[in-house]
Image 1 (cartoon, rainbow, N blue to C red):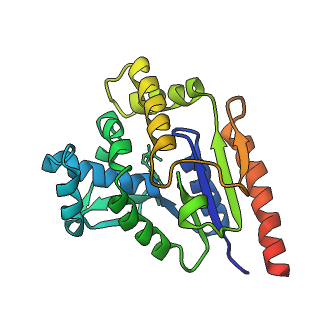
Image 2 (image 1 turned 180 degrees about the vertical axis):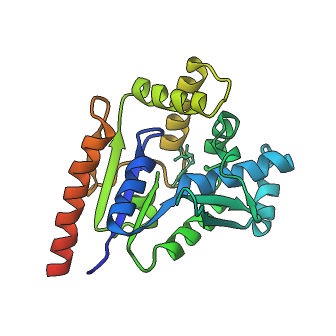
Image 3 (image 1 turned 180 degrees about the horizontal axis):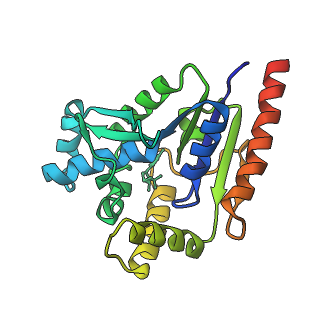
Length: 229
Ligand code: DC
């Protein structure tokens, strides 16, 4: 069966990773969470005191090794930074506060985009992020752009953080979601935008299950069409 590349982009907390994981599982594809990679570089910068020193961070890029390792119990891929499992730490609001500024740095993007292209070169991949359909895989056979109101998105993220035991306020989470959207959409290098050939899905009022069904069926049609070509 021919394999395709599926690119999922969109604003923060639109359910991209939930959808991408489900699609990858159902299709037997590799799932790559590119946000985790930007978060891991941000964590490195935080630990090394390089948040305000992009030049030094760029000089340190060769010292940053990133890889995904499958957790045998949960079957989820987890982010490793220089051989340390940082999956939990990269999801904190503290990392979210800095990640958009680190993601503006062109050299950081170049390094991560190279790794992402390498991971997807055999196709059979579902990758989620901000620039997958526009920059990383502009030839992806299926491109999805996810959206939802900022209130709906902040409410989801707030619940996630509370469930993980973080002590955060809804107002802070909403402010972070809105600020990240602004920076991600307005940066100079590969800003977040919908690729012209992406299909847009808004899930403000739709359950993620229902949305998955629709997108899965859509993906199956594209796969069948690709096989027939
Ligand atoms: O998907 P996420 O919320 O975990 O991503 C965290 C941040 O990383 C996001 O606010 C912007 C950045 N990012 C990016 O610039 N390009 C990507 N392909 C993925 C994430």
